[in-house]
Length: 406
Ligand SMILES: [Zn+2]
Image (cartoon, rainbow, N blue to C red; front, side, top):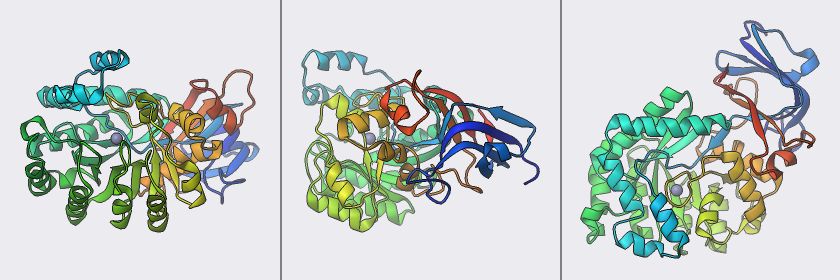
């Protein structure tokens, strides 16, 4: 291999997340090195056989993973919900806050009032924090604009922020996040607006279309109509489903070929079977489960049915103000009982699958040149379990994004 640009070497452990590249389901290699060229991985092997390059980074003792993939965030918004956080701690009910114009509606007001530069700056500041914790790909949803023009500018702001920070951003149109205040009494009119006016305005700025189906949000039929229209406009369906109440939305979305169904706290056996049959990824959002004190999704049933599990931060200003994906993986293990392997695959290869990007979240020759090396908590051996066990205990030693040290 010639013209290499960067070599990361002396890694105690490299989890390639590809069984063809190492041992076990995590594709583990010990005393490993990775070489990069042209933004991609050029070579993987034993560190003693590592080639030379203009930049060589030695990280003895480190545990390396593919650049992490956060496959579900709402990272573009303005305004603060810290007042609501305190009111809820004091015992106030979220639905009462929402009916009084607070909650998500307050975020929509503040987001609409923010100019483009402010939205980009806020999103970029969040992406800097996310990137510093080892994430190299992040999915960002719209959904705080709720008009054709505002939804479009949120998606463009997310893309612009990603370019400024140097992190891969994939965007999702979530006009059907909630019904805006001005149409609160006429949900059918808002669904028509989403399909007839918002979708044409945003189709070139998004990869996915998403709908929040639940009590107090949208119905299964409305969700199906929006996902179908989105698919016709060239977007890939995904869904927020079975979070607060069971509706059957996950099975509906699976039937439409959704790449993922997210939340799933109240998923039933039929829903599990539908996800398995369609190959739809189940995205676990432990941050929302923690902040809302919700029950766990049915992980044993999903596991037994062979449904791929991903884990995401669900970063948003209300129900999951979580900026750290590795912490989300720890929460998924502790609260949902994902194994260490499931938690790590959930923030790498399976998150890539949820985004229909099986090239992401793996370290393979020819694949994207994204890598994160962690130092595990003091006193621990460099193992996958040590990465997951300690909440906030692993520090980032290096991040390689598109073949360059960040
Ligand atoms: Zn969400």
